[in-house]
Amino acid sequence: MNLKNQSSLYMPTINRIAVIAFILLSVGCARTYQARYVETSHFLDDYSLLKDGEDGDALLSFWKDGTNWAAYKKSF
Image (cartoon, rainbow, N blue to C red; front, top):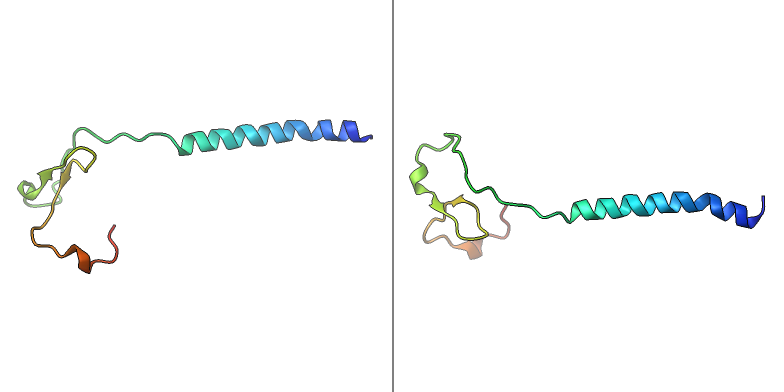
């Protein structure tokens, strides 16, 4: 088998790898959308403490007044 025939055997494999990599990268960069409505699960006793979030925030959130955020090194 000469060099020309050998290189033509590897070309379909390289094309497949390129297509698979392109698909994985495209899916990994897909845009996500936030829910417009949340149904409560009755985990909390009082949902009135939750405030409506602003644009780009969570739909419902709780922020305690007077919290010293500088004391926290990590949050989740």
